[in-house]
Length: 352
Image 1: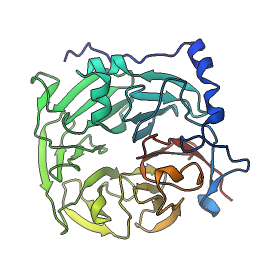
Image 2 (image 1 turned 180 degrees about the vertical axis):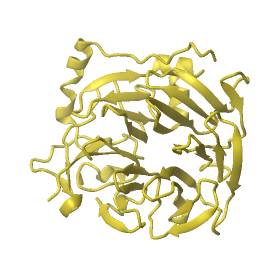
Image 3 (image 1 turned 90 degrees about the vertical axis):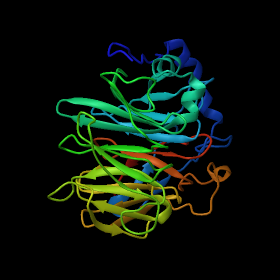
Image 4 (image 1 turned 90 degrees about the horizontal axis):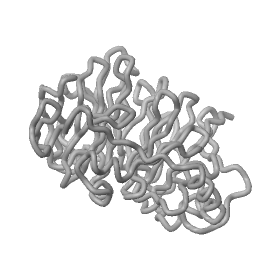
């Protein structure tokens, strides 16, 4: 793949945006038919109170979300949503909910797929600020088994994994089903093979392989769906947090991947997002947890344990299966869920 190739987004015309503007009236908060709540929907309490922004993230007619994969926010508070959908593969909104652009056919073509193949393999998306520049790291599930780095315009800068052929920006590497990426302040890159080998791989900023650890198990240093990874800077020294999902815990390591400690009492943790002095953790077990620098839980939000996707519209204050989340510069929270309609939602920070 040439360095000159771009993944050009498909920008919607004004007419297309207007055509889609009216679809929200018959769509409930969960993505199924229903009536909107009249009173503000709030979750949490005290300083951790958030209010649902009704209607945020809706798509024009003819487009729909699939199972919710990832959601990230760039330095200008633009929100990027990926789901297992062929139209769009990626949707880009501003913080107020205006749809800015969508990426579908051109996106798929430039990564060597059609849109259906993108939808089948879509999983992780990580935003990284490296120096003055911003980048995305996309993670593909099997059979794609790739991680690729792009700029914010979608220019492919590097591919790692099951690449068609090796080149200056393409390297073969044996992933069996990768799920997430994180980048450390020193530029090192961590990739978890969470749906496959249960291995954690460390690379330098130039994608030179440095170290691999892990494997399947319950003891420390082993994992059962190492689904998410994050490099936390909440303490004096950066640390690598791994969401060990089916073991219901967080495992914490040094940058060299030496075991340090475990944070228990999670409920199928998926991944992380750091905002100011806290880590936010979407848990597939129907809630969002917030922990501080001492790994203490300070809030648990929207616990919808036992609810199913069909219950979403009737329970706007509950989460069903949070799969990924992000926060913008104002501390507003964006969550997407592993339900067939994605259910991307914004919760404005409204401390009591």
